[in-house]
Image 1 (cartoon, rainbow, N blue to C red):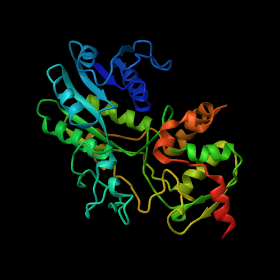
Image 2 (cartoon, rainbow, N blue to C red; image 1 turned 45 degrees about the vertical axis):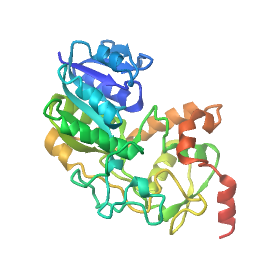
Image 3 (cartoon, rainbow, N blue to C red; image 1 turned 60 degrees about the vertical axis):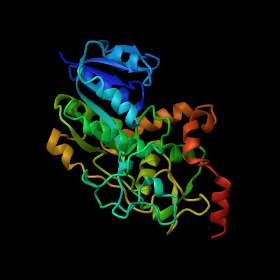
Image 4 (tube, one colour; image 1 turned 135 degrees about the vertical axis):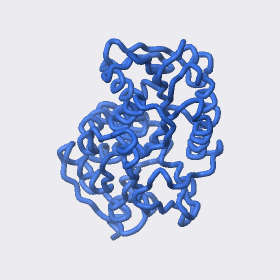
Length: 341
């Protein structure tokens, strides 16, 4: 039996990764700040409390060594160096990065999207050969780029698979994009406004598919960078319809030809140009095959959101969603816009 240590084990990706590795026969130590256990994990899974920022605690969780260390919560140079310092006791690593590290051929990135004409125009699909943003510590994207750069430079000491995830979805998400349509349906809204003609595509990445990539990479140590997204990249209108199907309602789409107007028509997937990633490298290098399509995972995701919302204000249930996107449910503004058409 080979040993795996999963850091960030009780987050949405970590839970799925622990489960996938344990069921594949790995001896798994699940590391989280609370040292908690998921009831769905096999009983053989060990738990260990450790704060990601505490070098000594993380080192203690690794103990005498492990064959693979899976880190789903690493950012920046500091975390990369922390992992590399464990190289003598860790056989290889699998680390979650993000598609937000990509830069288009004009130098536009997710960090420039709020500027006029600043949203990146990537090739469709984006491969791992696409150039990336300059590393730094100013933003999420630059920190992920710094993490990647530092780990790849140390690949001779610590083989690492970096997984560039898309729009992550699944249970236990603290910023579930699906909330946008789930809450509308719960509130009885039967008309929704979608910018860009409802045709925006922001490639989703289900936690079950990411966990499968982690499982395969753990058994095939090497230094590589791979996209981590679902087999399909539905439009925002298709996502809305799929959520309607799960919740059992019918909703009319009101389509804007262009961008949102004062926030009306904006959704967490609404982008002026497609973000669609290629998965050929994962198939070729790991023999990867997706385990679930986006729509297949929605019943579990929707049920989790509905349960968390029950009897609570959405801002209390999902404060990070409010911080990231602002007020997503300004129904008065939507009705005023629709009434003025």
